[in-house]
Length: 537
Image (cartoon, rainbow, N blue to C red; front, side, top):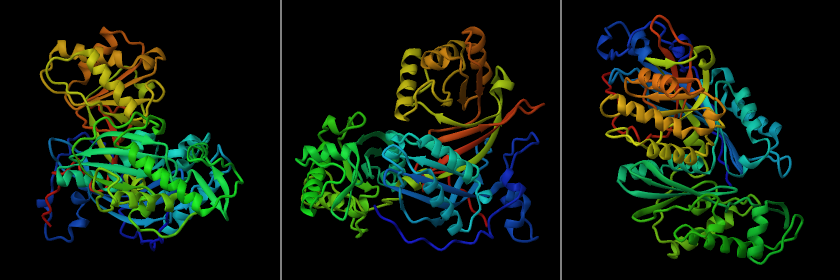
């Protein structure tokens, strides 16, 4: 568990405030413009109104409340409208870190509750140190991860912080999602993309260890184990915090510890040495007892391993201090064993360690679009805020098999730790192939099969397609299949996993719905490698 020196707050005098940030495109035009050539001799390009319309700067905040550490990162995100494919989407073209708070120990009020007032204070202090007011922050997210998620007031805390922090997306990351975020934030995804390699990211936090196999910049599979650096805390030789899993692991190592037990340094050394051995053995040869999820299924062809999370600071020797937990001993024991060849793969240089999840999860970009729609009940369905987007890995080309499609949708819900029917989500699909009635009908059947709980509770269905097919699909669902749920289908919008969307009210006479897309922006996003703007300054 480490902390870093706070960086001096930057001035935000150069932040683009004002109406341009709202950018609501109320006039109905396709906004497919690229105006680099329109700038005359009249002054700097940045003062040109057309340039300003295509280039937006946002101030963004990411708050990561983990088992062991809580941290806040402020960034300035530069976005540009690419004007490609008749799309008015904005892409991130640059990012600067404005301020990183020191990593504070996550404050607990008891075994089952996080201390919300103490967390709020950490965040308020970060705003003050960054010289920012919540009103000047355009977008951001709160992520609760690891053991912090298990606390009974986790959801309430996320919501409380979202309230004090300004315009927020609030997500709680389950094990799979956190493993993905860490792999992107650590730099493992970028590295796998650049080197065309399969890389394993091992993120060791305070309560859990998250695994992600990344291939060509995409996270292929994830898993989580119940080993972390802060399951036991010792102050002056006495145990002052003992998570149930900490007690269980200690017992398996031959120690009958409880709160208040006196422990010797050499006993902690023996425990962490055993835990390092256990962890490194359980990754290639899964020990089911340790896993919180299904283990990784396919480990062949891994070119190297990156470590991230608080414990990785010690694996890479970047932190010396001891925070009274198992972190330092565990990290050093892991490094010793990896160097001695006790792990089948080579260790790659460090990327982001303790800040991986906060970077991975911190920045949402806001984008705007509006296209043809099917809306069964505008009054009930719109407006909507913060719908999480899930994009199942299916191909809609060729013959569509409803059962197969429904199975893929169910697996995707599971991968993102979302229970179908509990939360409203927007399902996104890329439409391929001919627009025949037979294929539309099979797709609609698949949607019906894949949302049993949603339909039973008559909750609304939100579908987003990138092809021009919304009205047909909506009509089949509502009129042919006679679904009791209200149905909204938008098309012409390209979304992906980790996006969240806000839907505005229908605009007349164009009959379009404004969609604000809040994309989770990963540092040097490996998934849009060829989207670089052409700079003609």
